[in-house]
Image (cartoon, rainbow, N blue to C red; front, side):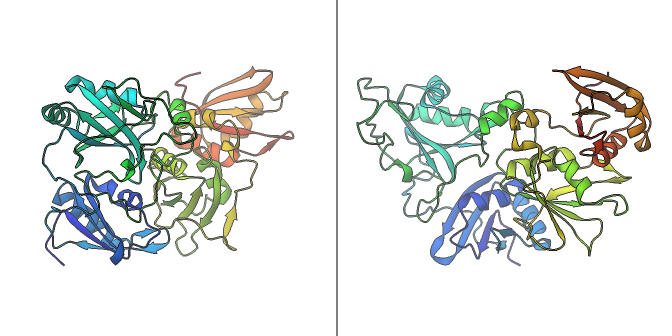
Length: 445
């Protein structure tokens, strides 16, 4: 094995694999500072912030075969200790200060406009021009200051900072450009030295031509790269709003792996429908497969990467049937349909087909209290206790009506008892009604 280096050499990088795919593969191990795609050779060079981060990645991927879009990729330490050159297409300046900076926004859960960028960068000097565009590395902007010193001050103060709490992280480098050409003043571009520019040329897009390939210090090359919206989450703003203005700490909103590997299950207590009842709290379920050669393992394919990330975040370490669950992203992009898989993609029990924002808002780790809805109108508190008491000691219950519909709250002594009640009784029929159960975040009844 080559000497340890913060630069990792990646082989078998097919044309279908994007820069963002590689970033997703290595981001769990630390900050990635540079990425060069060697398209002609089906290879890539990726530089971590430090050697220990690279060593951690190599240790994991020496035991687990990394796979992207169904293709095995092979990793090893590079003979380079540092990436000092950039892709020829970018004509980067390296570390040379320049009054124009290239800004990449990571974890962009809220729209970033010219006005937002101007508010963030103007405290460090007069901002002459701003151009924004979308690239495979994410949402990017070029910001031109009046002086080079202003750009230096901005990078020193803002590099790595978040525009909003927990998201919209700034990655700022010096650009190779000498002057920005701005043709329109609108939400995507602005010349603050010429307020009389039109908002848009009739019949043509106002996207600034040419800046989609603008070079910076970091080599995210334009050649052969497909544009990837960032984050890869449908309705990102609505999702963020569901979480009271920001995602839970530890949830990036950028994961694109849909399949989750669940291990340390209790084979005597679990089945596909019970797993569905639990994981459907965090997103729609496509299919589930219990691994016959590993009876305490299962694969769960969620509707999208964000829902899978919620499931991993909230269920890792949860107790169920006397076992502490291990929940991690699978190396498999999806579950192949077959005789041993259970299909749920068309199930009307999937919770996120309607009122998705409301269901996102209810996402949480297992709690001691469960909420029951769609109950029979005539059901009593005693009948609810009788239905659930086999799963553990019930501390308190409350039956109530909301909008004319009977609902209930039930508190158990432990989170594990409440989880067992949910996985066993959700979607069961009670007096002709299919009841729905979820965790409640209330602390007391």
